[in-house]
Length: 207
Image (tube, rainbow, N blue to C red; front, side):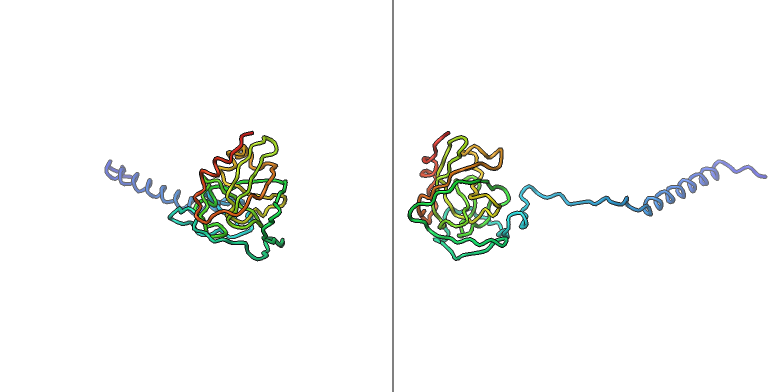
């Protein structure tokens, strides 16, 4: 038998290497994915879950204007099977319960009366108060309190009576824990222009 020359050996080795690579690639491609492995797309920090909040999110706006909403009381409405009856209690609304706060998921979206939610302003959502209006919120554990501009509807979680902005939650000492037991007192109607930062900040009482 004739011994192959070196060039022939090199060509044979190259062909063998290519064939082996092809077999490996084919084997990898044919391997089924392990059962039970589901790849979920990560949700952004500002993810809005309609099932969680009970209402649909409005689209974000490009221009963060102040005020510009409607003077609104509204008709009775239903969320998650529960009816809410907006009204103005001229004798003075006072209620004790659980407060929460909302931030990124709603920032830059329209509120229930057409204003734009800004989590850096002292605002709040209430299910039945006139829009816009003012309410004093007091943290019953720390004693801190501040007047907020109520310009949105909510919250719709059982047991919660008001949702405040992130900034308001910071001033009320519960932004790190999420909720707090508070007293909510209706103050009165608010002007539509939304230029009330100085008034709201001046209303702050530290605990």
